[in-house]
Image (cartoon, rainbow, N blue to C red; front, side, top):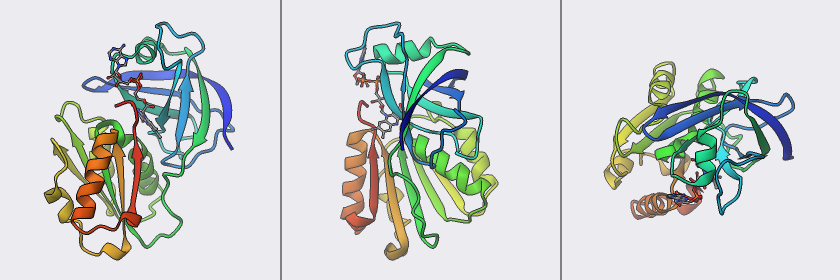
Length: 228
Ligand SMILES: Cc1cc2nc3c(=O)[nH]c(=O)nc-3n(C[C@H](O)[C@H](O)[C@H](O)COP(=O)(O)OP(=O)(O)OC[C@H]3O[C@@H](n4cnc5c(N)ncnc54)[C@H](O)[C@@H]3O)c2cc1C
């Protein structure tokens, strides 16, 4: 069940071009599953924002990390993001959650193709880190597209997770995800789940391409980051 918590910033930094990560203290009673999201807000916004003083963010850190919750976002110039940008270590934040069902199914004998557009990497990072550290052996192929290498958030972390694991493979893509990137993963459609996260237009486009190349809609799960 979701609850409202107060927390404070313990770390903040630029992790890629125009991309900020904020880690906050994880309230001791805050339980979540990898892939879920929170509503993060501030009590005293520094800049006006017509959409208010909070947004929802997928949790990028793993539930195995009991001390902190990490979120990451692209800087867009909205008043709320400008306020977040000026938070300092110790600044208070409000958290509500967890929310969402974008989590791995209990069934362990499935293969997963994760398709991330830009900052859509956040829920996948949490899931991958959890699977790797728990040595769950669940096969995951991540296709991760960005405008450039410089704008690729969590690049080093993902490279390390891939290296530390026999079951996780990462394709870093510069530019758009095209049919050619997806086709090579169509080996056995019966035991594969396709997951897409990113800006709404990217999610719709990739979902259409998948269906054009034979993937069944019922095997596609999506999360659209509205606002991008
Ligand atoms: C389930 C879920 C999970 C999500 N997880 C994440 C996540 O992990 N990371 C993440 O970053 N987002 C995530 N989002 C999206 C997030 O909630 C915000 O909608 C998104 O970050 C855009 O917020 P914003 O404040 O930048 O833009 P909004 O205020 O929503 O404005 C939309 C657009 O308008 C433009 N704009 C607004 N104000 C200005 C201004 N003053 N000057 C110039 N341009 C402006 C920007 O281009 C902006 O992108 C998630 C959404 C959902 C539904």
